[in-house]
Image (cartoon, rainbow, N blue to C red; front, side, top):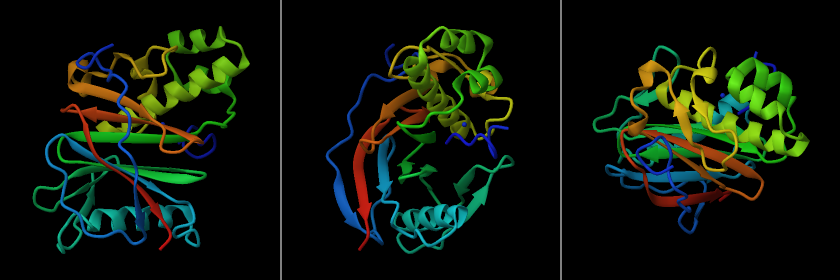
Length: 242
């Protein structure tokens, strides 16, 4: 999610991209959600959570509440053993845990849960209008910033949002955070589907990465970054107030 104050200041499979893969038909769930089996291997669940749910909580407390509540449905009654990596990326210490990642912005929350590998997700509103030139010059590679500067206003805004969501999702999958790492993830500026050109050394080979853009609502776009497997959608849950 782009936050200019607090946080900014996030081809074919086998080449760092993933061909378009539509979400499955949504399954409507009431909050709180019921117990579920954990996803296996490449199976991946995507959750879209209505902004009305737990809206009385402060932003960070709400995100934590949503995360804990959804992860608990996969654990078959086991206590939630949530921990964090050195840079703050959360993970489960439960036996055979799924991997997961959450992104929250105005109008909704997405949470991806996968049976293996590492995943990252970033969500943005399509109507965001950030100071594109300034942010691109600060947070993108010089080549990407120059390419965006050569576009007109709306094209530049759209290209910036596409790049930002892909880059932040990648940083969330590796667990580095965005500071110092966004420019090292380089993507093609034009395509709607994320097409990675290069990655920082710790990320390994691009052949191990897949990037998928999806639209969980008609007002949002998000990118799922996946390391170690090619995702296969199992469920797309839309969670509404009970």
